[in-house]
Image 1 (tube, rainbow, N blue to C red):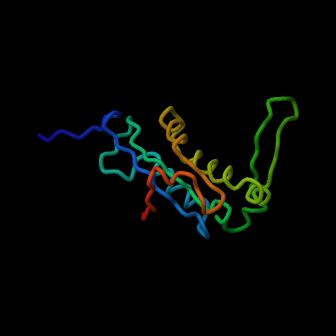
Image 2: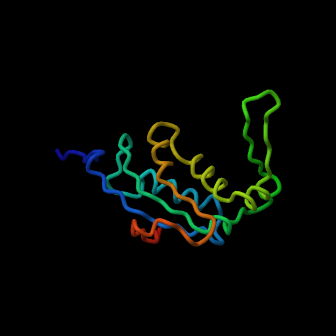
Image 3: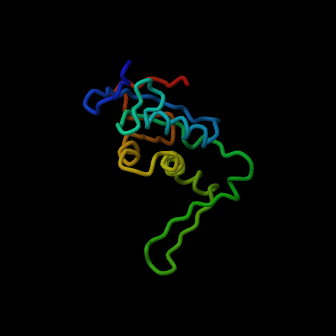
Length: 143
């Protein structure tokens, strides 16, 4: 009987990948990034071990939302005070903070546990084509 391989946290080697979001749907880019951050693209994926890689998303401002989402989708957050609900349409969010819109989409696709929280720290989102992670020698992800 063959035994299943279980990855160990100390043996996981993490690579850096770049995803270009220009002219691609925001959700598709976020889903690809969440898969890589979670490590599900690796053959040695183990659910209870953080096997994910680092992800750099560039050109977040050029990501597109399909349909009427720019005018109908809202980003809500609460200050914690009475009457403190803030409401921003995605059209304004994509103009002012496209990095936040992309990272929120990725965060929603990660598991809601300690592995998901740790995975999100490996996500780097940049508005334009320039990024300051060249020292890590990232490679473009072809998936």
